[in-house]
Length: 250
Image 1 (cartoon, one colour):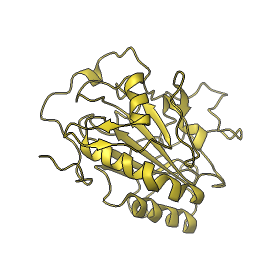
Image 2 (tube, rainbow, N blue to C red; image 1 turned 60 degrees about the vertical axis):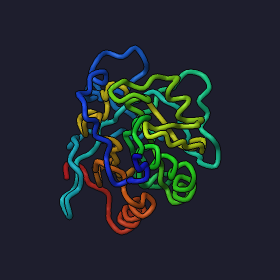
Image 3 (spheres, one colour; image 1 turned 120 degrees about the vertical axis):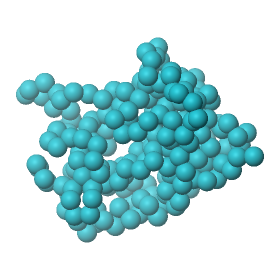
């Protein structure tokens, strides 16, 4: 029997992934080009999203990481983990620019996950976030975002209905494990990996990113879930408290 609690491992399928690269009729993620000259993507306070040094490279010691593009998804937004995420109605546009916070007043660290319904470590990590991590870390300025790539079958992109069931539970992975905690954070769709494709292969989930919300610098990028997600994020909360944000053209 598979062990669904090996959270440090990534779920690599022993098959060729087909459907994630094919056109998908449902809502999906977007890796946008730069905004037209004279315009910018803004956060809710009107600050322009940074567009210099965009890429996928994370921080390496004292060398700053690149900034993540303003990825855009469709999904169900929830920044208050004391409430359940509401999947009623149609998915709404969710952009990373909504969480860009140059002052660090509301958001300090963005933790972005790429997950799939069939993947045991993805289910386990999602359950940990919903049951404890999101509520514990939100008061300190952490926001969790999760993009669902595959549904219950590996290589078959998630749909809106799959996403809604993922949010409300129960969630079942391909080992038969059942997870029941309703989700309480922002969850989105990326069935064709249009947004997260540059970072990892669809069959290598979960994928985890820590992002400095003050600058959108990629702090860490890893396949597999961290053994202790709270400790992993707290490390970077402490880092943001003692280090300035990445500067322009740094």
